[in-house]
Length: 101
Image 1 (cartoon, rainbow, N blue to C red):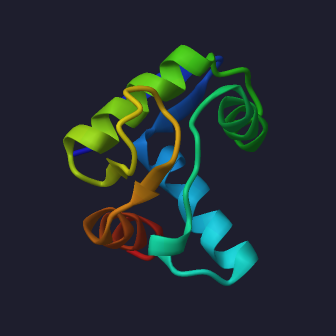
Image 2: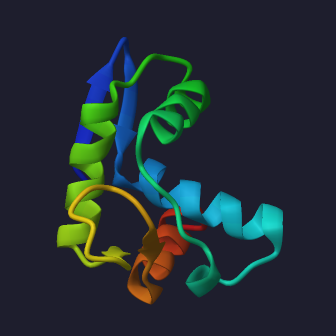
């Protein structure tokens, strides 16, 4: 289930977070289990650029929390923050279904 947030007429949802991982996979020709991202200021800036509006880091991290709760992303270290996250197999399937429906 998707949760959406509206900013300046633009919609952001969990798929925007998952797409960061997918884009990294495709750009680097890597499998999902080889991609680790930190969802901090740089990720928020990339999503903001993709959507054409400023999305605060805190909002991006709240969406990341939903992805973790849905088991679409997983923490790969004991770090309780948003570093070294990995896309799960389920997360990849959810995103592919969303992108190619």
